[in-house]
Image (cartoon, rainbow, N blue to C red; front, top):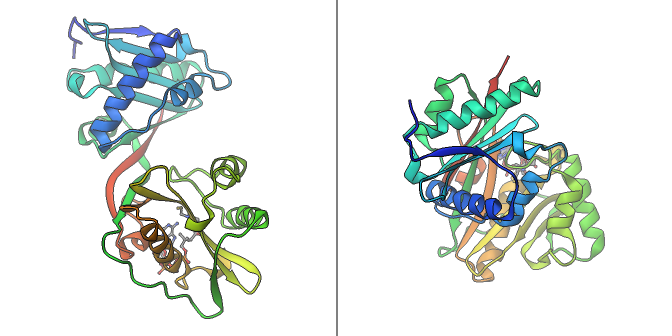
Length: 303
Ligand SMILES: CC(C)(COP(=O)(O)OP(=O)(O)OC[C@H]1O[C@@H](n2cnc3c(N)ncnc32)[C@H](O)[C@@H]1OP(=O)(O)O)[C@@H](O)C(=O)NCCC(=O)NCCS
C-alpha cells in the first residue's frame, strides 16, 4: 500500500522538539488504546539514551502535512516499538514502520524481534500475525472497584498478617521477591534494585497500604501497594514464598490489600498481571478483579 503523499517518514535526530512531538503522539496512542496515559518526557528520553542506541539509525518519526507526528518507530536490543496515531491508522503507515524496524534489526544481527501491542488492538494484532509474529506473552490491567466492601481475608493456619514496620521489612520483602522469582507484568524477571528504589525506598513506600504475611518470624507473602492520586491504588507486586503456594495466601493478601485501599478512600484497586497464556490468571478474577485492557508481546524470527 502506498503511503498518502501528505505523510513523510524521517529519521530522528533526538532534538528536544522531536522528543515533545513523540511524547504527544505516544500519549494520543496510549489514550486511544487503553483509555489513559501516564507517558512522560522522561520515558521518551530514557528510551533514546539507552546504551548502544544510534538514534539516527534506530528511530523514525512520521509527520503529516502540518508537521505533527503521526507515527514513531524505535528498535533496540531485539525490541521494537511502532506507534501510529489513531487518525493515521489504516493507510499503511504501520506496515512501513514495521519494515523499517525489521530491516534495521536484521542489519544489527538481531535474530528475534519482539513487539508489544497495547489495548488488544485487533488490526495491529492481525497485522503482526499475518507477517510471521507469534504471541509469546500477555499482560492485563486488572481493576476492582472498591465501592463494595471486599470479603474478609481468610488466612491459612499459622499465617499472621502484619503491617510493614521499619527498614528490616524492606530487606525481607526483597529477599521474598528473589525467592519467589517475581516477574514483572511483561514476564521479565523483576530488577530488584530498581524495584527497591521505585517502590520500597523510604520516600516512596506507603507502609499502611502494604500487607505482609508471616509464618512465625518468616515473611512468606507480601502485597506491595501504592497510590499516586486520590482515585486508584496499585498492587505493584504480589508474591508468596514458593513453599507456601496454593494455600490461599495470595488470595488473602489481595483481599487484605483491597481493604486497606478502600479504607484510604480510593475508588479502585489496580494490578498489572502477566501470563504466557492468553487467559487472564484466575486468581485475580476470583478476587473480583476484571481486565480493563490487555497487551500482547509478539515475536518474529527474522532469519
Ligand atoms: C501469584 C502468587 C502470588 C499466588 O500465590 P498463592 O498463595 O499460591 O495464591 P493462592 O493460593 O491464593 O491461589 C493459588 C492460585 O493462584 C493462581 N496462580 C498461580 N500462579 C500464578 C501467577 N503467576 N499469577 C497469578 N495467579 C497465579 C492459580 O490459579 C492458583 O491456583 P492453583 O493453586 O489451583 O493452581 C504466587 O504464585 C507468586 O508469588 N508468584 C510469583 C510472583 C508473581 O508472579 N506475582 C504476580 C505479579 S503481580
